[in-house]
Length: 231
Image 1 (cartoon, helix red, strand yellow):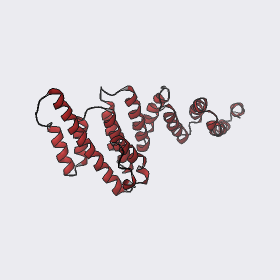
Image 2 (cartoon, rainbow, N blue to C red):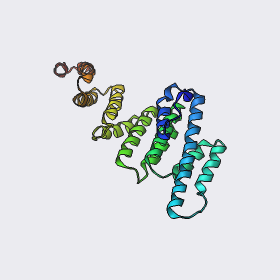
Image 3 (tube, rainbow, N blue to C red):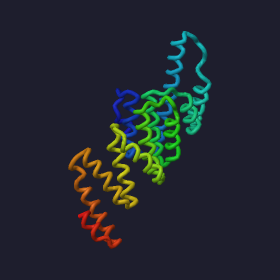
Image 4 (tube, rainbow, N blue to C red):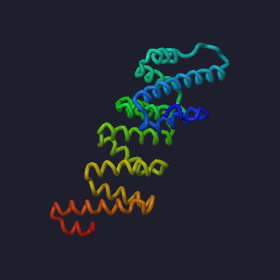
């Protein structure tokens, strides 16, 4: 699968392709993909250092962090390499894509804690733009769901679902999954009604099903009037 990815893609596009294919990748492929992304981090750091040298018209050596991270990478010390490159890399759209894809691949390996750590580190950066922050928060909320930290995921997704961003619908859909899993039918109905207003009749059948669940819940409490209102 990795070999089938076109070689003319940019680095960001390549990383996005890897993230999209993660469910189809074997564990060995995932290991190779993670190593490839870490090597990309190393190259990005090297390029960043070169830009700084050109701007300053000076010729000092590359940063200590670059060589430390590269050494960790060569010795297959993945955790240490990630930590070093995260601290050293500048914030830009390309590196955001890198870290989002890296987190997704960690999830594929079952290492959700590492993915959460990567996302949390990005959110702590003051240079993160509002658009980047929304992207990272959404991915972090999905990690929380995978880890079973539903309270954290719910709080983050509820906030994202109220924001006017391109990720509003996706955040609402994940929030709906939590409410359905927790059998919180009233909250699920409210979210689905919001999605119905945003996206139209696609959510009609789901909304009808949720009202039936809510009506059944009313009946278990002997609230016949409430059940009738739901139906």
